[in-house]
Image (cartoon, rainbow over all chains, first blue to last red; front, side, top):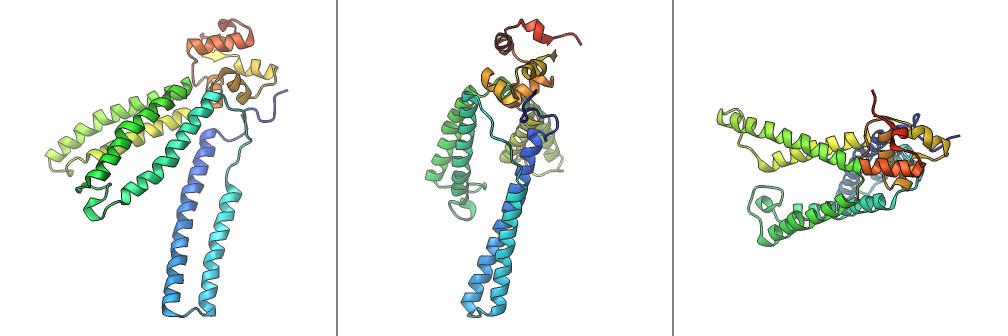
Length: 215
Length: 64
């Protein structure tokens, strides 16, 4: 007899579970941040103008209630899976990926907001040499090293998915970049944004990798 | 490519995760092989054959 955690024919696919988690995490998280902003804004205005009345208290309690309710809903509907044994190399690869996300995202946010106006990292304006050097070292030295370490740990199925993604993304670039260039020359589109193109290529790569890996 | 991996695994009462651990691959990889979405490389096919103490052609069938 097969074990109950077995395949899996009647349970949602890994892709469906991941997509549901991403949806709940993104939409729910974004709404939580929005509500927290509303709460902070309302509270600061109320304190500033000195009208902490009963009505203001009710409004604040309602906002806190909404935040709590949303948090409960996210917890309640978060797709859970049974813990399962993971091969050592696969665990290493996952840990490495988690580390890259855990370090990369906060670092990206910090670097992204460093500077003001045109000095922002995520703009085309001039940037200070310190920020530029830091970003270049992260992007051109540390990221390739971590990618290489991750690549050595993944299994062949994931490597295939990654390669398929790269192939589709490279073809997407080959077809889209000249078309945009020609459209610019005809006056139909603004000049090509290299970082926008890079982002499109990366998204296409990730989408194919995800589909091949989890769907 | 057709294969008997799911049947062989069921005979041993192994979950996909257990088999994946024994083969040092992810559960997604085992699932993809069982459902025919991924054809294993020759080294992995040999590992599978050794694990079940069978010949590769007794597990995998390349005829459509």
